[in-house]
Length: 316
Image (cartoon, rainbow, N blue to C red):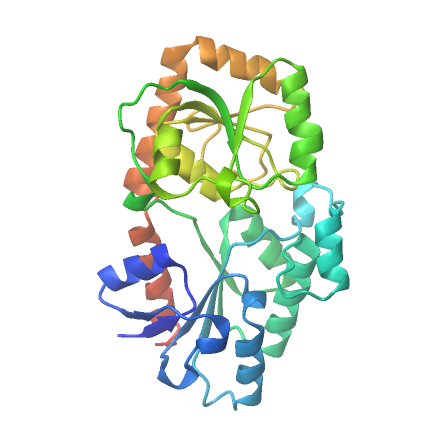
């Protein structure tokens, strides 16, 4: 069985349940000699020491590197979405300081391109339809995967849904200054939780499950226009909350009108009020979305596909 390192806890747990030996390791602690496969989750730029060590090794002696990419990348040209987006001051500072933790779309694009040109990535998985199109435009040999559901993400608990509208996630300036302020000016009382930089305001684990079970509608406000935040969709849908989103380019596997609804920020207050009033309609969409993620879009199914592709390419 392949040993994999540098992955995330949920993926690691699923791989262990499938019978694989998984070693969770930070960048500086990955034992290259003992790994049959190195699985880098999220962004290969998060592993600068491992990258340097791999570059010093003859290709015939180093373990295969598999990347499951999850950070935002520039939109594909075919999407028609703007290729240039403004960065906030924190993002600009990280770029200027050459901070390896920079996660803006331009830093992500540069780091991924560098590792692909170096030949360090033996198998690249990209997240969803938009990244699949982007990878194709860049000439990358990439395989699509989906961010998926795990039972630890929660499920409906039958609680009273006393929170009308929730946004949870990082409070980027676009969300805070433009989107949330506009919703509130239009009379939408949005509860905001989950700024990753302020632990006391974040939602994690059982607390997040309980809060989402009290929520009627989760609004998806994008970091970059047109982007699908799969994790936010999955978490909300798993716990029976309905998603109202800004328009998404390539929302598949989610179907608009069946699993979520969308509108421009100008029309969103009207849509939110409609589904707060029409309880049966809201619950029907939430139930359809819950069936999709818990029955069809599971991490077990996703990782079975990932491992099968690794074996198909004779990487383990």
